[in-house]
Image (cartoon, rainbow, N blue to C red; front, side):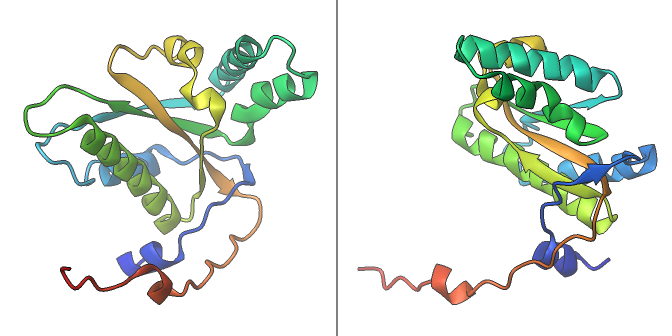
Length: 187
């Protein structure tokens, strides 16, 4: 697949089935992540792979966090949190590892970690793997961070759900690029 095809046509694929990406495909996914722009070569990211029964444990963790956020949360919200990780055969937790640096602010490190996640999404599309990036309130829960083993300076920036597309991916919408670009005259 041509690079421009992936850049111009990648779309989120939310309906995912078994099988999960193979080890060979995963190696490509994570190699693509390592090509993210990274001022200072800090590699301010890391990833957790969650699959099999670990997805159920992650669901329990998310359900606990939902209850901690709202002790009166409706059962439907708790069930949604619990079942979330079961929507795909593989969940990749994207973690930003923010560190004090004399030249690279933490905001730039966070953006680099997001670019690494985007690299995974592009590499998934290029290999015919369905993928979607999900966040939400529970992504930022201290309870979830602790349960996933994050340490000080680390934060979850997203969950990448990966698997075999249930349906053919939709076509990427054609955007009016000119609506997002303008010249600046310097005054």
